[in-house]
Image (cartoon, rainbow, N blue to C red; front, side, top):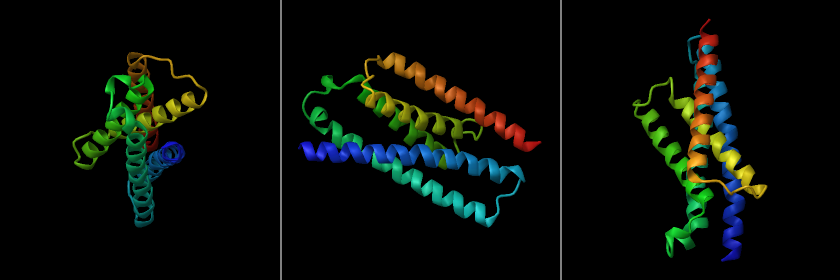
Length: 165
């Protein structure tokens, strides 16, 4: 069981890194594409590749997180650590927002910022875990996650307005 947990933990780190990096590239590609008001074939192809990597990362994070939490989820859910609850919340936000953006139900004004902010929050949590800093409440996490998403939304809006000029 230990080797499964170690492998899942390593893969989870890789998927988080891929997600954070490809989320950054997705936003930058988006800014580049809207700068001239036209998404050409090359930009569309590159954005497709980045979005594919984002999806792979999302599925990978879901699978590895569930693999790491399976012993707790099948025995005593009350033993879930706050950091695990935080990860599950972020995964839910990532999937819900991605689905809403795909269905065109999430305004472009908010969707990319929510997605980027959630990826960065997941990266921050992973970094805090590496440092052994996991003693925070779920409420503290939710407030932090919301703040990161708000900053990301503001940042995306700022750059979108700047690119429109």
